[in-house]
Image (tube, rainbow, N blue to C red; front, side):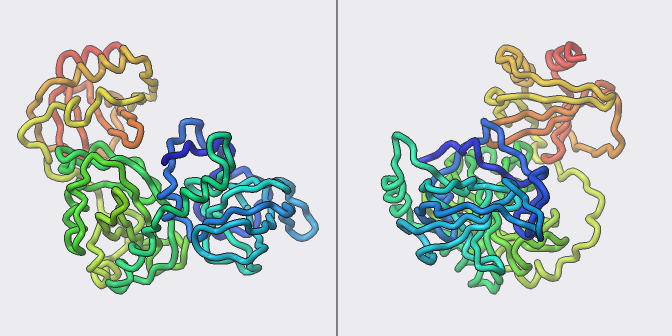
Length: 406
């Protein structure tokens, strides 16, 4: 079952503010998500949370900093347990809903909360934050029914944690859960149509993550094109401690099975096998070297429209090196854009020009769970997908279409 994310949920822009900052003067760093913020499934919420509890709000008190009242910017919410489907909590407990309020609970209401098990110094609990921290009843689904559905989900976070611990990793907490559709088998070799995720950036072809997963007996390939969940853990460092060289563990779940796992270093220092703890921790984390595109992943030629499924894009934004910008949302223009790329083209190795050229167009092609970054230079007519390492001479129809964007 999938649920639209509630419009009232507030997210925190600064990761550190959501996890460590004790109080905020106001909620200026918190933004409400778009109405088109996607969906989240009950199993993903169960995996992300340590505690899932149905409770009623006894009271909601403003957070104070000395004598100054911070009003609605932060609350200490006292709740009484009605039912629990995961983890354990005292019959009456407190949730610290600050600095960015994510549950927005009011006295007298009942709701299902998704919480961290690690308590604050005062014993209060933390909401999980993203993707959502609380669910209310709806006419179609009362809270009692919701709890039945939540209890029917077998959590997989314990299995994932055990996998990392088996290879010596110290799992210090969960970071976030993402949901997306796995690439199709044909797309496993490409990285350009990037998966939109909060917990990881997929800068490598998915076949590389599949190979890393194989090292611990897992295989995502049979689930190509299927819905998936990526549960990301903090490893070694203190939970929420964003420092260069911090390690993140990623567990891939499909059809309620653990099908993939790998480790990454933050910021981007590659992906590693879960087995390679010693290597990962010994990897230098100084200033990353000068980036260059990978070797051409499609030396045999490419049909950009079909390789990246451009016809299914929902929006195309562009900007130019000269400062121009715009968006394409009209369905007819979107179809024309895809049709202009529907031609097989020979490819050459891409190069990365670190200087912004006024003749370059930068296209951001947006899909529901992915996006494609495409560059086009009017000087030589070359189209480039940097993450897949190739350039190709643009079809005449595409050059004409771009000319009309000026």
